[in-house]
View: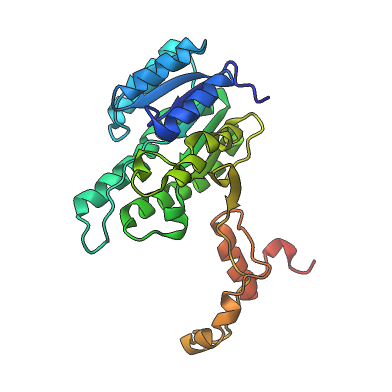
Length: 296
């Protein structure tokens, strides 16, 4: 059994849906939980955890308010002395086709999903570095990974948190901080009216939360994009094909078009260790040899 005794977890957007499910499961495994949301749902979930013998603290604030988020972390530290786990779950939808979407609706979704994750992560980052331990889960979405009609704002924000995760996983590695993403498929208030009753039953939030538990455990991976829904679990990857090299100086677009099938051929594709790896691949194709390996 994954044991979180002694750990302190913060779950945003935890007044209902996925956040509530995550908070309850983390508490069941021994974590003391800060339940964050805007409304009374946070207090209800905290009471539910406390009534079951766990320890929970409800803090009502918006993740878009960096000052309030910092105050929430300070309250957590004052109460329990540490923050080990952050689950960035808070979110909203403002769906419309891009042609009909206002810039205000675009900004608001980016503010909640992307900047909300930034605010919460920034507030706990130094704490986790100093204690040499941290587990952070960003909530992404298949809409960000693969696109979804009418969700350009949501898709942009959700792919943004993937990029945030990729870099923070690298920066946090030497401090014992592991950072991952969860892409859930679940029946929540955000999907209300989109699913029939059978789908709603099969996609209950509690069938996603085990993935979050795995991503915050002592043995958690880092830089993983975990997809979960209905008891199914998959990993998504941002890959790089082997591609080609064009010898022209400069290369000719016409040759690139003619060899397009080779460029997009996914056989032997790879997952780069960092953004620099793409440049290394391209330099190697261009004939560059590292000075330390020349003449070896």
